[in-house]
Image 1: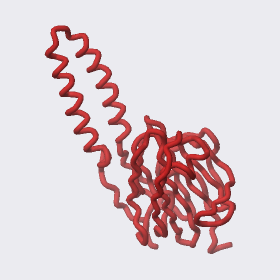
Image 2 (image 1 turned 45 degrees about the vertical axis):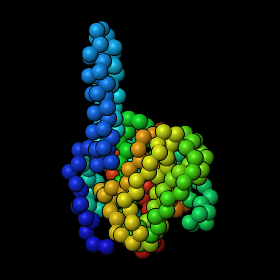
Image 3 (image 1 turned 120 degrees about the vertical axis):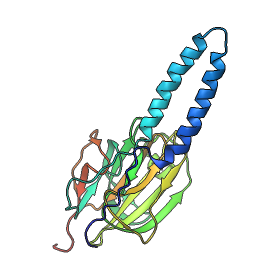
Image 4 (image 1 turned 180 degrees about the vertical axis):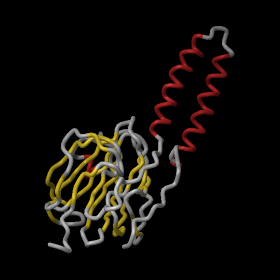
Amino acid sequence: MGKRLKKIKKIRIHREGTDSLIYGFIFLATISLLLWRLDTKIPFWIFTVIAVAVYLIVINFFRCPIRRFPSEDTENIVVAPADGKIVVVEEVDEDKYFHERRIMVSIFMSLFNVHANWFPVDGTVKTVLHQNGNFHKAWLPKASSENEHADVVITTVDGTDILCRQIAGAMARRIVTYAKEGDECYIDEHLGFIKFGSRVDVYLPLDAEVCVKMGQTTVGDQTVIARLKNKMTS
């Protein structure tokens, strides 16, 4: 596939948050101005303090850190597709795409995490599929199959298929996926974005070496969650 591309855009606030931040600021500022006109300023100050706190949380949520994986050697490396915490590391039956046992590694993103998602491996996008569903709390086991989710199957250079599943949570109501079938994809590139609390699952072959454990904090595009067995030398 050649040298890994470097197509990082210097975005400090993710484009998915631009409208929310602009309209949110206008809405909050309008209410503040109306409250300021009251005879007593107590409601104004109470609302302003709460509004500023909420707005700062939303800004933090839509942050888009500029990241590069620290090594040029990404062969057989699987990186965390999201910031968050490891909530599942277990073998499961994956009957939708692979029809075999797989290792599922799940990362839960809280409201305070960056919600941009990165491609976990270098390769070619094989399948992109969005499925409507429920909005259970993202850390529940049934969320992986029953919640609204978007699936991206990626074929690595040596032919290994990896499934990355973006899952909506109880608050999330919009999953954005930038991946397109047939496109080459690379670690360091954005796979998509999920608005508010949510989760990302990665389905790995059983012979993959898992490099994370339950409760571990992950940094998207930085934390190595697994190493794949090299088929070309096996």
